[in-house]
Image (cartoon, rainbow, N blue to C red):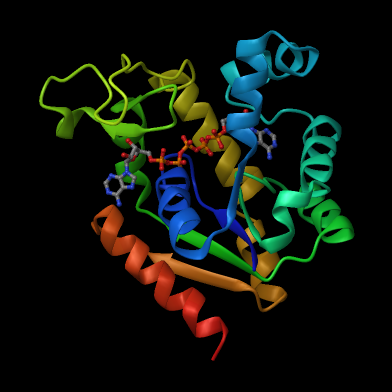
Length: 210
Ligand code: AP5
């Protein structure tokens, strides 16, 4: 099964990907994580990506599509994968359809009023774990590996505002794109916990095979 995880910044794509990876044995491919690793490593891709990410804009399509196309040609994805953060506009979606077969698009729908707090309160670890300050009780290190937690450079109110605008204008139209293909599975989250959202997603995905 090959799926796209769609949702606004802070909707919980990364959180759900971690659950789905375990349950369905899908390879998790996050374009945001790939860009951040390139920025950290000081690569040419990282140098291009940084200014766009800092401004809350999309990294140019030719860079992003090439990365995903190359990643999907690797052997480990043959058993199925999840794309988290790709595609992010209609051009990327059409490109993806030209080199991959997508079975479903899981649209994680969250009230926009919740997103700013979720993102600005997020603390992450270099091991991939993610937390919210409201549940950390003052702890500053990772529960999983003990390393110090930090805030992503683009998780500040100004950049988050730009990211939400980019989502609304360029990414949200993909909801109709996948609905027209009969592949859209929307999960209305309301105030549901990550575990409850995961249950809802599983129900939708398991329904695919019936
Ligand atoms: P990317 O890394 O993809 O960021 P994003 O889409 O903005 O998404 P986030 O990682 O912020 O949020 P998420 O939905 O994963 O939420 P999370 O699970 O962490 O992209 C970053 C940048 O890279 C982009 O702005 C762009 O510049 C560039 N880029 C990436 N892909 C690109 C592409 N295809 N084309 C061009 N440019 C691209 O959850 C958020 C918080 O909420 C956490 O604290 C979590 O603990 C909490 N939380 C999660 N679920 C719940 C819940 N149910 N209840 C309460 N809290 C919850």
